[in-house]
Length: 366
Image (cartoon, rainbow, N blue to C red; front, side, top):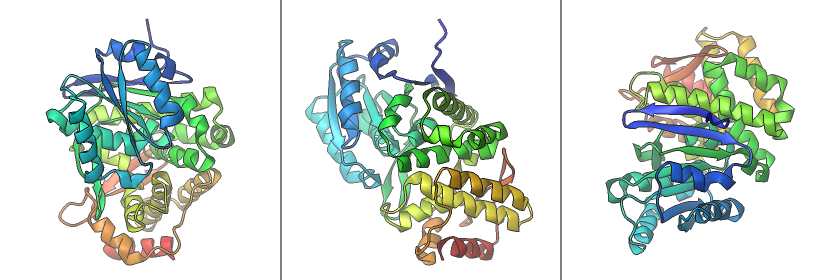
């Protein structure tokens, strides 16, 4: 029987996995994991904000189907993506005598998914791994595609792997516990998908901004599935970011990641950094004669309707530029920029003049 909640299937070198989104589907997670062949016990990694209620709900859903589930709770926030916490989880797994065939279940946002996935990729040279994203940004972006990582003080995600999950199961109802700021930063990633690859999705965001910010169940679930499908398609085409397709997903991230790192991950949520970064990238594209001013303004208005920041006043320019120089996508010391030519049409450029980059960053942070 067809799965009405199936958003997409990701195909990768080692096989494929389902990407699922529905309203109220945490209850059936035990059944879905049994279908994937997951056996007892499992190891849930979640954070202090998500454990109650969602981590506990997942634990109960597994136990109802005979899967015992141990829980490790990390502090909420980007600083938890560290060697120290990965080491603590390894010790916990060893203490519980975890075996190679037993699965790690990531229940939470992108931080939990990245850290849990990194541990899954490296513990016993790889154990099964399932993503249960509970933030918008994780649902439409971070949980899909197998990028797992921890941070170094110098930058985000500098130590990591490509390690695909067995499945991604998103219960959109879990987003109802988020504040407006957290919802908005997640929608930023979905808006990004539209801006780079799906002009029709941008139209939907413009027509229904208020309903989406209110998390209207049916519409929100449909838009999340559509955004997930975009990410899944890109990842299936370019699993390891070698063909120049997957890098398009980094629209707004060159400046965005640098803003996060240069403010020590304390001032901006990830999607907020991306929103500011998208405005910087749009300005660069306009200055290069690639993008009409009307499209720059259209993007600005849309981000503003979702209450997303478009500037980052007071951040030292030098700190942002230094963080950008450590970006993983640099080639020969030069940043590769994802830039728009139109709504729904993005390209990669490696020839953006440094003066224009500095001028753009200065405008964003002054």
